[in-house]
Length: 300
Image 1 (tube, rainbow, N blue to C red):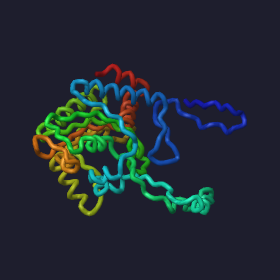
Image 2 (cartoon, rainbow, N blue to C red; image 1 turned 135 degrees about the vertical axis):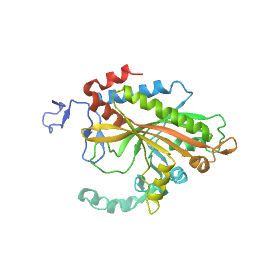
Image 3 (cartoon, rainbow, N blue to C red; image 1 turned 60 degrees about the vertical axis):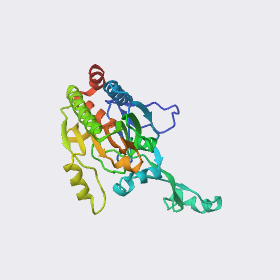
Image 4 (tube, one colour; image 1 turned 90 degrees about the vertical axis):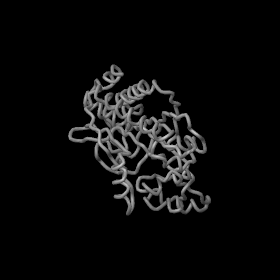
């Protein structure tokens, strides 16, 4: 069943019909969706559920903007590893007279952006990167624990269900000694797996790798799987479509070295548990329909 949004102007075009179901609404841009109120109720219940799980540890809460310093992303190694996913921010730095020559191209679909220049910001590709930058130059002999939430962007133009370019990520992040990070990740992987099972999602846990770019990508991916640095929890998000809705990652001392972060006088290790909020909400709606939010609220 669909409903029509009434128009205040009787002569205006009829607005698009918006589905009453809680499912995301496609836009003209692949991988970008609108989210109705029913969907947001599930997302809110997910946030509350993760907060309940995290209440047993002294996490500091951090909400970050959807952009981050380009220098920070370069320092983190993201540009070298995943340039195909990165969204950069450009702006016009020319003169008014120069723009007067370019402006007519806007209406004709011309190259009005020919003089756009890259700025000092990029679109945030993962919620955890600002945490490492904030901890830079510090010692975490007592492990740091941070919950962080952000709207992220990865340039994956696809029509596959759950494969989004703009999405919200909620992460639990820790930094400390290697033993702490390994133990912490194993504990959270088990806890989240049991939570998903209680929610009726039947998760499958698999060793995984990231989409490295360039001639060495197969070597990096094989090493990541061999060392079991990344595990994904996969569940159905639509009929016949299974996606990773959460991942548990151990970065070893990569960010400790990159950001001069130490633990016990050695480069610190880091680990994170990341939830894709839209994918997870889609999985719950797929499994429980209109009862998805109620199932979440009833399950701790």
